[in-house]
Length: 540
Image (cartoon, rainbow, N blue to C red; front, side, top):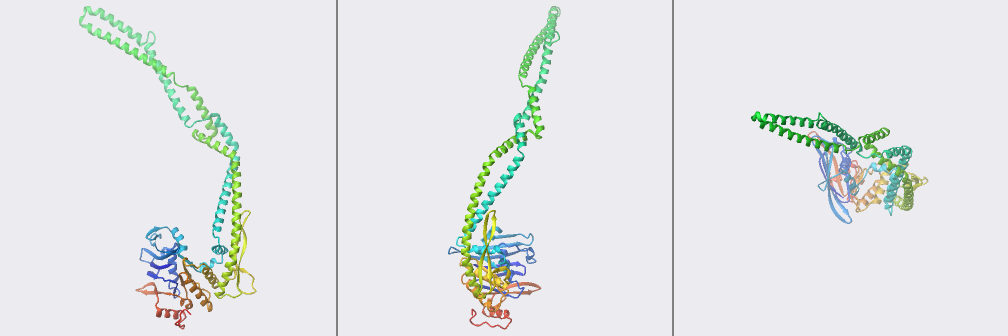
C-alpha cells in the first residue's frame, strides 16, 4: 500500500505531498494540469528513466520520496524509497530505507509495490505474448513455466557446446596433417625450454676457456722454453751474480752484502716463477676438462634448423609441442565426448518434452476457467450477455522437433460473430474494460497498489457506472489509485485529490490537494459541466 508520496522540484511541481488512504483514491483535474505527471514521478521512483530537463529550473536536483506499507505472509512493515535526479550530471541515486540501492533492485521491488495499468498496458493486450503471460499467471502449477525455461536453457546450452565441439573438430581435422608434421619435426629434435640460451652460455664459456688456454700455453712457453725460457735465463743470471760475488768479495769488501742480497732475490724470484708455472699447469688441466665446443655447435645448428622449419622461436616451439600433443589427443578422444553430449541432448529433449506436455495440459485446463471468469466479468462491465471468450493454442517450434502450444485470447463480443483476435476488433474503451477485468481476477489483499491511468478512455454512459462498481470492488480488497475525467468514477472514491495549476509571481506551479466534502461536490460539478448534483448517497 502506498501511504505517502512527496515530489520536489520536478517540472511544474515545487513541493507536493500526497497522503493516500485505503480503498479507492481518485485524482482529477483539468487536462494538462499535471495529473498523469504525478504517476510519472512514481514510475521514476520505481526505476523508470526521467529526462534531466524535467528538473525544475533554478534547482540542482529533483527528488521523489514514498512510504509503502508492505504486507507479506500476514505481517506488515514500512518501506521508505527516495530517488534523486541531478540537473548537472543527469544521473540518479536511490535509497531504500536510507541505504543506497541500485536501479536493478528497484525493478525487482516494483511488482511488489504497484501495478500500473495505463494505455500502454492496454496496448500490451494486443500482443499474443501477453496472452501467454496472462494465462500462466493463473496456472495451478506455475512452476511448470520456470521448469520449461530451465529445460530449454539447459538444452540450448548443450546444443551450443556440441556446435562448438563439432566446429573445433572440423578445424582440427583440417589441420591434422600439419599437426602431425609439427609433432614429428619437434620429436626429432626434442627441444627443451631455455636450452638455446643455456647452450649459447656454455659455448661462450668454452670460447673463453680456449682463449685462456692459449694465454696459459704462452705463459708456460715463456717460462719453460729451452734456452729462451725465464727459468733458464734466471739460472744463468744467478750463476753470473754468484761468480761476480766470489770475484769481488775479497777485493771490494763493501760490495759483498749487496751481491749476496741480489743472488738471494734471484733465488726467491726463481721459486716464485716455479710456483707460477705449477699454477698455470693446474689451470691448463682444469680448462682442458671442460665441454665439447663442436657438440654444442652441432646442437645449436639443429635447433636453428627447427626454428627455420616451424618459423617461430624455440620457446614457442616447446609450447607448440604441448599444444599439438593436446590437440591430437583431443582429436582422438573427441568421439567419446561427442557421443556423451548426444546422450545428454537426447535426455534434455525428453525432459523438455515432458514439461511441455504437462504445461500444455495445465494451460488448456486453466484456459477454460479463466475464459469463463473473464466472460462473466466483462458482461458485468457492460459487454453483451452473448459475449464469448476462449483461448486457442497455436503451435510454435521452440526447438527442432519440440513444439510449445502458445495460448491466444479470442473473443466474439456479439452474437453471430466468429471468434477473432482481441487486437483485431477491440476499441480503446473495450480494451480498458478487458484490462480492468483481468486485473480484477488478480486482486489480492497482499497484491500491490493498483494504478489506473485513464481506464475510462473511450467509454461512457451506464458502462461508466459498471466500471466504477468494479473499481469499488477492487478497492475493497486492495488499494486503488485512479486518474479520471468522469464524475461517475470520481464520485466512487474514498479519497479525492484535485490537481490544478497556479501562477504566482510569473511562475507556474502544479498543486494537488485532498478535497473535503463541499470541495469535492464542487469538483464533481465542474467535471459534469456544472449541471450535475451529487446526491447524499454518493456511492449510488
